Image (cartoon, rainbow, N blue to C red; front, side, top):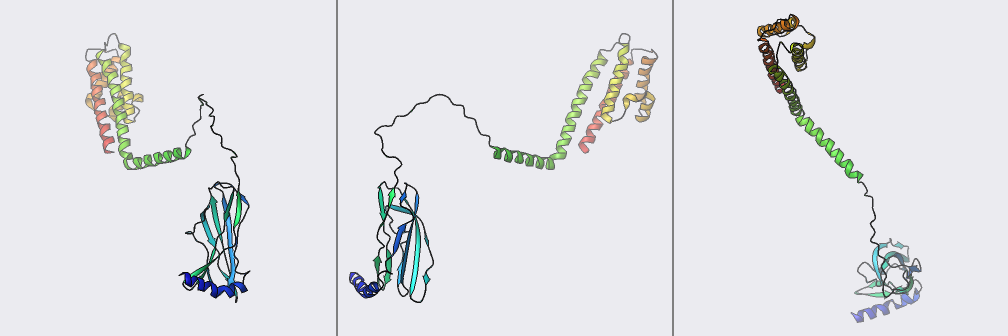
Length: 296
């Protein structure tokens, strides 16, 4: 291999001598000083006869004391006699030497071997930020509490609110009717329970002769309950009008008995039974309304 390389040099020597200036590569940094970790550009170019093949260093080459970040090779420019190749190398150094040098070679490819030609080293100066390193470092202590305001994560808030609205819409769309029924039934039971507690307690404590003014209030309480339950103006209707709206002979008889006690002063011990029948009518109306909601 060595003999072939020597022969290749002697074969190329006349050409190298003839085109000595052409076969000298040009390699240089784009600036004269850098800091540690800073990127610098090294450019390499060569003009040579078209019948010769050349190779520039690639990523496998050792660029010490530099590290290769990237390489950009440009297309070959040729005419009838000469070709021109060029490339730029983006390098970084983490060495602490004040002066750092680099000389990238170009390889002239021959049959079975190659010849290395170099442009001559180019140097670059390292800018030292820290001039001297002390033997010991004094650390300033500060144990005082410092209240740091927390930053609010608005993107998370937007995502959370959007997800909540979307999930709520899906739930309402899929289960909306069932949910509305449950809410309506809950309100109906709560309203009926409150009325029954008040109405039954008033009937049990009723003394017709002593609580005469309470008879009219008790009747009005029943009418208002029926009015809200069935959405009809019971409180504005007379007993005769209620009879047409609710054709129940027992209800009609109970209302007439209560009217006689309120407006005619006809009070007897059976008045409590008449009010109890109103309670049973409200119970029936409640169950009817509940079934309407369930089947609605």
